[in-house]
Amino acid sequence: MEEKWESVSGGTGQSINYYHPGRDEWHQLWNDGGASIIDIRGGLREGVMRLEGTIYYLDKEVEKDFRGSWTPLEDGRVRHFFEERDENGEWQVWFEGFYSRNQ
Image 1 (cartoon, helix red, strand yellow):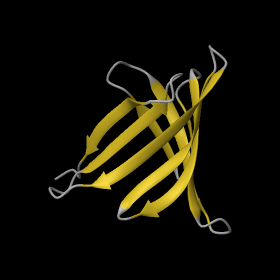
Image 2 (cartoon, rainbow, N blue to C red):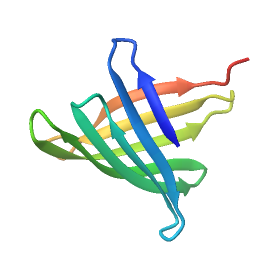
Image 3 (spheres, one colour):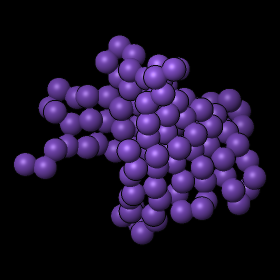
Image 4 (cartoon, rainbow, N blue to C red):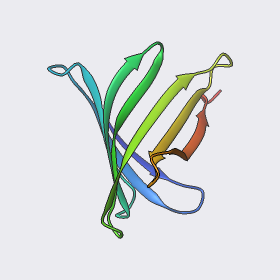
């Protein structure tokens, strides 16, 4: 599946998402208009989609550990949460969003 997006601040990007049956895992390759590349993989664990891998910042030539989760909420929304590991080894919030179906 291909996703194209635009942020509220005008940034753009796209991702390719697919399931690899030989590895039994989901894979997401994500690019935000040339500034960074996210390469994560994983699967459904305890009702939450969890993908882990790296983010590479093209302008800084820096790669960091990166992870994302998609959690269904009781009200029908899905919480989308991304984190990156900082230089001290601590996880920092990178993005948090909530998705709901159009009514």
